[in-house]
Every structure is written in C-alpha cells, then in structure tokens.
Image (cartoon, rainbow, N blue to C red; front, side, top):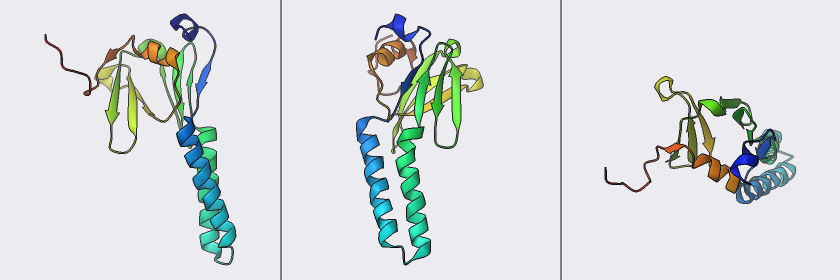
Length: 144
C-alpha cells in the first residue's frame, strides 16, 4: 500500500497480530474448559467463565483504525483518537511488558495516542510513520 492510498478516504482497520490473537483464543478456550470442569465450585466457575469471555473478546474488539482524518485506538473499555493533521512525532518505548508506540500531537500539551505493539501493521503503516520525526531512544546516535 503506497502513501497515497494510505492517505486516501478509505478506512483501514488493524487487528491483533496472529500470535496475540491465537494466544488470547487459546487462553480463553482453556479458561472456558476450566469453568466447565469447575462447575461444582460456582464462584471459581463464574470467574473462569468471565475471564474466558474477556480473553476471547479482546482480539475481536481491540483495533487501530486509520481514516482520512484520525487514528483511533479502541481498547476493551475505552477509545482514544488523535487527528492525523496534529501528529508531529512518533516514539517507540519498551515498558517491560508490551512495547508501545506513541503518536505525539502537540508535545507541549502532552497530546498523544498510545498504541500497544500487538497489532499487525502493514508496509503502508510503516511508510506513513516514517514520515514523522522519531523520538525513540533505541535509534542510533548520530553526529551533530
């Protein structure tokens, strides 16, 4: 996908990458089986069933949507977005858990969109991100 098609009026939706999707489905299925096997222990069965629903629903609900005007990150219980025209820089951080990508808008006002690095982005996304200033610490140091 070229930059021009990425910037067109079409909406592009990115979902979990295959590893995270299958991990969530497998853990959710295991929790569902555990809930059935523990049906005599009602509280444990309910907790396992709720956990199973959460794990199976998470890769189906969470998404990063890019349209002509904005980038939106939809989590399980929230949705945040930033206007594409306000994005000034990008930053990758390793939090010790999941690496995150931060799309910075107005840095003085701390306007940003934080996206966990668990989505299957394509070359169009990478090309588009490369047009912004990279604030990441993990890039090589250059000479002034």
